[in-house]
Amino acid sequence: MLCIFSIMHALVDGICAATMLGQLAPLFPADIAVLVLLYNLLAFSTQGLTGLLVDKVGRHRALTVLSAALVVSGLLFPASLGWHALFKTALVGLGNSLFHVAAGAKVIKNAPKKAWPLGVFVGPGALGLTLGTLFPWLGGWFAIALSAACVALCLLKAPEPEPSAAEPVIRFAEKEDMLKRVLLSAALLFCVFSRAFGGRAVSFPWKNGALLTIVLTLSVVAGKMLGGVLCDRLGAFKLSAVSVPAAALLMLFCSQWMLPSLLGQFLLNLSMPVTLWLLCVLIPDSPGFAFGLAASCLYPGSLFARSIPDSGVVKTAIIIAVFALNTVLVLLPAAYIAKKRSQTPDAAK
Amino acid sequence: MKKIRSLTAALAAVLIPILCTFPALADAAEPPLSAVVRSDTVLLILIAGAILVAVAVVLFFIIRAAKRKQK
Image (cartoon, rainbow over all chains, first blue to last red; front, side, top):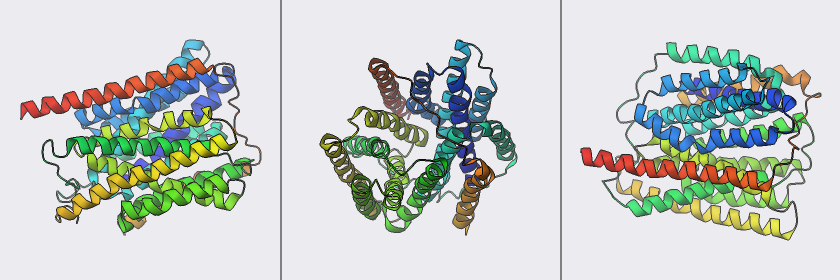
């Protein structure tokens, strides 16, 4: 099931990009930037609400198929009039939002103690987005593949996870460390914000063609996919302590060279499934909400990155400050959860 | 084994479309998003996003409290 969700993730993001940039951008060139802003608002900022809906309804597979239907409808809906463009944007934006939380919550629910499934699920999204952006004509093929994936998802008889595997990492008592958990969750949300900021704020002068754009995307995908595996092996604390500062140094001072930039993006994205998994551990009963909350912080981060000066000391100072804060703020929850897990040996298995 | 299988399948899913589109790489270019967006539009979108997230957080705590009362 994880494989199908991962493939669907790439396809959903690809269709959304193809709809916005392949269909709407040529028809409404003057308004496309506003439409993209609106799409991002619906796709990212609503994920907290759709996450709550998914946690309440609980039928993850059905909601995933519904979200895919919304996205495909958005692609197929005609775009001749202004309100059509708005409607298409709303369909793909809300479909994207629902897909991420429905599929993401199912992935977390099936294996809450492991971070690697999260990494495998979130990784391919970046590639789908890049392919949909560069080759919008692939949108139709993506829609056919997504429909096939939905059929496979409906037919698949996935075994229920063993009860011990589906247990939360830490079972918090009612109101246990409530304030601490709220503050640590806020710290993790800042880390998500700053990672989106860091990924956008640095420009890569060597990235001057489609092939190099795909190579950069592959380093992002590899980082996200391996981040979960390394988190399970090394622990969230060790991985974050090494990867975030190294990524900051490489991206700040070596962005004009290709290989160090690729390594920097890879290291930066290693922390992505880590923060997501830590947040899900802190909010164990509402995986959809935890997933959605994290996603809703990505968008302000990338908007903030566009609003700072293009170059100069101010930009460098802001990026250094954000990355330094990120390092500290990801280590605090990682240390807290490691300590809690060591106190409950059964949960640490 | 399960982990390796999932990783391989996901990587294959990622790489196959790239190989399929390889001949078109030379012609592809990132679509420009050069249309100017007024800064107050961006601010409005940001505020709308913040409101949506805040509503979700408040709802989360309300649902939590209601669940606790039911228990």
